[in-house]
Length: 546
Ligand code: GLC
Image (cartoon, rainbow, N blue to C red; front, side, top):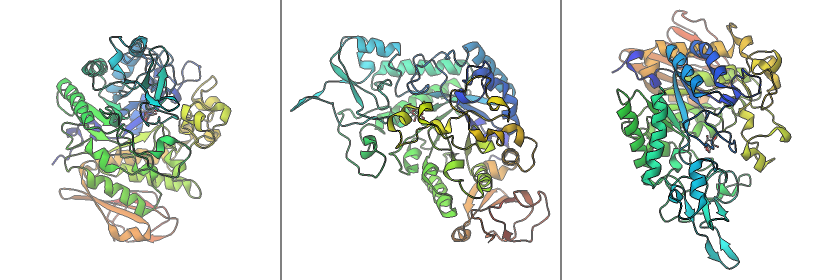
């Protein structure tokens, strides 16, 4: 069995850090982050210990959905910089051992993409069949939608085009028409776009809503599904026919073939998929189907169960255990607590008393699990959701459902680098308000502070790289502690064993792992202290023993 870090493919070696480029660092004073800003922070990321960066979309876009509506898949939006700047970023990241992966939006383009403009121009257009066009059904009171599918960002998933007299499908906003992936020309064109980035040295892709690609051939109605939710009709159906069709897996196989034929080995480049289940549903089994044994489908897929969980030992255990138990033994897990679509875990799970201690616990959890941890920018300093006033909202989802849904801007506020003007993020007016807590919570204040969250993240990442049991070992949970709010597990490889003990409570508890061994890292005990005799755990204590 593999036990040295270097013998693992890059994406198994360390955390992957998601950057929302608009909010990372602005170097030209326009209030929007840019590629040059990312380049300037590469040393920061290297020092943190990240092994890869996932860049949310930086392609030209009219911003109906903040970059997830693309007009040109092989260029950079001028607000972020240029292809020239991108090449330097790839090169300089590579010099620091950091790989770059791009966010690829394959399900839909912008309505301003030349393909859609052409497709829309007439029913006879050469590109008509590149998108999904349908006649309306005839109803008692005139024209009706082709079926009952609803869009994630409100309203029906069909928009009528007056000029050509048909409806087109869009599972998100009407400015994001869905491509017709049953058309081989679409498949070829998109593979070409992926090749463009691979040629530039990109090491893989995060695939946006990858399970949506192919739709039911007969366009059947989705079944009704009752749930109590904010008023989004999209959530009142079970998405049986607009997602997860078997042909999608064939497309993924062809993407994987492209990457494999491109790289020297099948694991040098990586595909990680966003597999979206019905809203609020834990669906690790669905995500697992998109990985299979990891050899011909995706390398990694996100299980979003942690987004819907609570901070208790039992809940965390069942989410993790469910994820591991549905994965094939050859598959490699990954873990994600926060991203650009969700409330940050620091707000969702760590609000109230002891919030900083809870954040340390989540960090210890995600960085000592099996598989690849994904970190979201600012997670390492404990950034919390912003409070965005109605007039500052940017996100189409937030604007549409105000005040029922908070939207997604809250987790996209600018990175907090310093306590100076603009939080060190910008000298201009930031595109989203900076969270006022930047005066206390920022990178500069935490760097060099031995008790800070940032220091804790660095120590954990470093430890994960040092200990083979942590980066490559098996995991076995100790059930005995769960009723007592203690989540403990052993990570093993060969003769080596590491014990992780997390007290998920504000009370003193007992260590269910017994006498722990030598302390490798702890929120409460001295590192490298000799065999520990004390089996009591302090409130929220996190200790890693060997
Ligand atoms: C994914 C993205 C989200 C985007 C949507 C449509 O869920 O993460 O930000 O709005 O797809 O592209």
